[in-house]
Every structure is written in C-alpha cells, then in structure tokens.
Length: 140
Image (cartoon, rainbow, N blue to C red):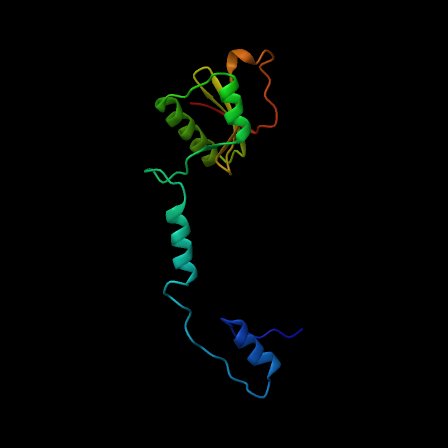
C-alpha cells in the first residue's frame, strides 16, 4: 500500500481524490472555527461538566452508595464532603483507580477515574476490617 503525505479535512476531499482521479484537486479550505468546530464543542462540554472552584470534578454517589448511606443513617457534613473530594483528588494524582477513602469513622470505596463513590459504610460496621478490590487508600 502506497501512502502519500496529503491531508484531507473532509470525506468529500477523499472522495474527489480517490474516486475521481481525473480531477486531481484537493480542497485546502481551512477547518471551521465557529460554532461547529471541535474546539468549540469541546469547550461547551467542559463548561457543562460538574467542575468545582478548584477545577476538580466533584464526586458522585452511585445508586448503591446512596442506598448504603440511607440504610446506615449516614449523613455527611460539608467538611466531610470536602475531605472526601480532596481524598479522591489525591488518589487521582497518585494514579489510584479504586480507592478506600477514610473520613472520620466513615469508609468510602471510590472509583477515582469515574469520580464515583461505589459504596459507603461506618467503620464500626465492618467487623473484619478487610477491604478488597482497591489499589490504594487515603486517610482524609
């Protein structure tokens, strides 16, 4: 297969080049920079993402974690929530994928890449003190 160094910006240019070889012209129209450009769409997605003032994505709670918090009558204070966020951020900086984050007497398993609390418990409930399927821990 012979490769050439021409760049194509649209399927129409590729069709003209390879399906109509007699018209050996390449449209060198610049990429769009307005509303439909990739950069514009990417910026809109970033703006609509759940970002806090430090630029870190807030953790979310899975349905399972919300049920666990409710069943165990666990209510997080603003301070505890901020410490959980900070623990998830620190875990992400260290490359941890699934982290145990301890906040006071509460234990959270967090899927760090997805910013999602998978489960939550009061440390006094866990009789065995064994946590599995984690690759790191943060005490916040």
